[in-house]
Length: 298
Image (cartoon, rainbow, N blue to C red; front, side, top):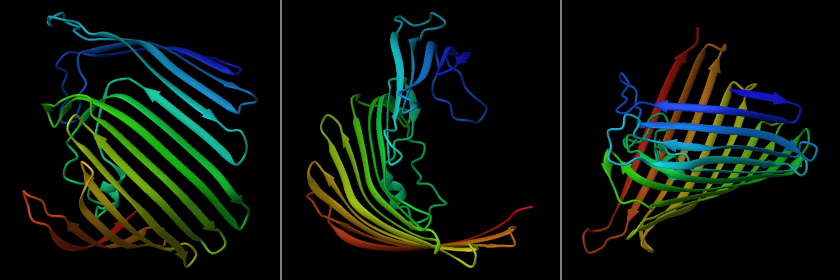
């Protein structure tokens, strides 16, 4: 329930999920919780600053069957700052507990078939704290050309569960992306370059993946055909030791015929170079993957 007037919004929220709640086929992992929250939002300094927040109490043991009851403060805050037409800054923080699939951007980068998700999509972790920061700076913006710089940073703390089994708590996930995007509008050509970093830290483990990505796309025949080419090289380190190097190159094409027939083709090449250790030998493997898709829209 919310009430809004000039320049502000205030509200009250209530959420309850019964103990041992289950759905008929859909995945739902939160249960036995109750949230009572108040929220507010406002804009300041000629709408250059936007702030929204949500704070309240969360408790479990709703049917009084547990020996102990957990009651804690939960909250979230979102801040957006636009000092000029060229620069936009935003950040958010939340400690609401929620289940999510922990995946770094490298799983998508190294996926040979973007239409098929990796087979570990049922590995879920409970996020207790989540912090994000995003910024976008426009270098050029005309009717013919545009260019911008982007930076995205996130930090997440997991607590207890993954794949249905309880694990040690306190794992931290850090993700970073720094990119440059340029577009030539009359020729429908775009180019981007980015650097991606993912870091996972636990009690006795540290996994780091880092690498650049280059991509370009071009539209032809009055936007009926679109070609895309991307390439990435990333290194994975375990406890500061190089584990493997993955190089991939992906070419894709989409073609639309009479706005009803859509064809798409993706061809990916992935090369994996694994470094040997005391437990296993290293090696090199290569993989080619091609996918052709047709869809018809009524």
